[in-house]
Length: 107
Image (tube, rainbow, N blue to C red; front, top):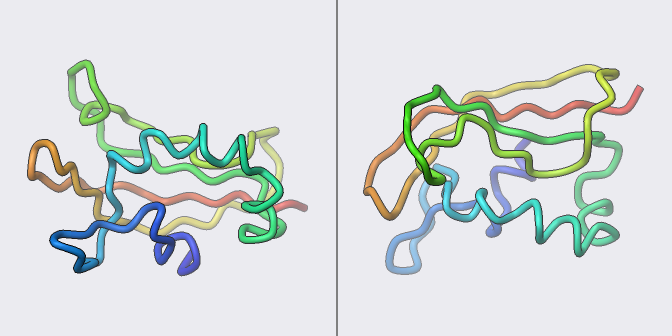
């Protein structure tokens, strides 16, 4: 989990200073990046089958209102799920939300 939270691909930053949260605008487009660089992220994530973040839902139309960010892999419903709460920052709105980072390991 620390590897994921520490990746610059996800970290919040303001004026070049990183803080203890995940940037939702970066999460929004990451799946496309991970799919096109799957070999690289496979070495980082190791035996992880799937990574996603669930967010408390709100009504709306853009990334601020997403209730889930699929970050890596796909689910077949097998494997142990590890989870940890995370703070998500929405830079366009200057607001934070709480999410649950979930990782499904390979059996």
